Every structure is written in C-alpha cells, then in structure tokens.
Image (cartoon, rainbow, N blue to C red; front, top):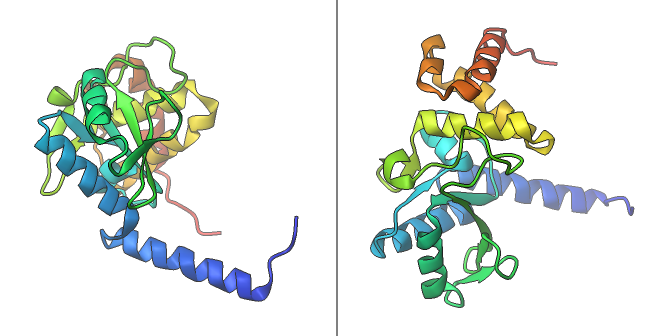
Length: 208
C-alpha cells in the first residue's frame, strides 16, 4: 500500500474535520439526507422512524455517522421505492433494502418491521412497528429511547461484527445518565446485557 504524502495527510484530515464539524452542527450530507427522506415519507403518509446514530444523538449521545437508518414497514418501503427510485434514489443492490440518496451521496439503510437485529435470526426482540415505536421531534420522527436501546442490545448480543451497538448503549447510558431502573422498561431478553453495561458505565473513562 502506497504511503500518503504529507500534503495528502493534511488534505484528508482537513476534509474529515470539516465533515465532522458540519455533522455536529446539524449540517452536511447526512443531515440533509435524513431531512429529505423524512419529508418524503411524511408527505406520502408512510410511517417511519429515524434510528441509528441520528436517533442516538437526539437521545443524548452524539457520534459521527455516514448513513441514515430508517425503521419502516415492508409495505412502506415498497411504496417509497415505487415512487422515488430513479428520482434522487437508487438501489444499493438490486432488490435490496438499502438505497442511496444521489443528491447527497448518502446511503439510507431501511430496518424492516418484523425483521431481527444483529444476526437476523428469530429472537424475542424484533424491529418494531414505527407507528408505536416513534416519537416526534422538531425535524424527524425518531425511534423511542427504550426501543432504540432494545434494538442495539439485541444486535450487539447476537452479531460479533455489531459490537459498536453495545458500545453505543454504554456511551448513551453515560451521556444521557440513564438510571439503573431503566432496564425494567426493556424486553427481558436484553435486560441482563443492559445491567452489565450500566454497571460498566459506573467506572470513569480513562484518558490514555
């Protein structure tokens, strides 16, 4: 692999910092893509809820992301694709769930009601119906806090490549100061993992 030149290092670092600054100010491609997809789904009367890192940020833990996660029912996704594919959106993979917003060059990942987080295998926690899992914000409808935590815990518990989801919950517990009894609101399937992460959150973060 070719080593980067000093100029390339500076250019890439400046671009990354500019992207991060825009994101945390609620600007840039990801936020534009989230606003666009939310507006189009709402206008069409399609129930949805923003999930993933954007929902994390709304609930108290902000981290950078490069895509938008949207909870939706299967028929809602079918309606959206019938209306918008070829009009600012393209399939990432033919027949797949994800699309790309071609205006903002951002991937939109759809989480389908009834599918299962993490390894995709049946488990007590499934992606919920956005009609009962969403809360309304000023700009978006987002996944309610306890539903978001359930989804991330079930994902991280069952898929070794999804450990970021467990890290997200740990950081969210700290950032939002979630109380110990928050675990009682969660499905029993994930309560033990929440307890483990809540106890871990009591240890101060170390700077190395």
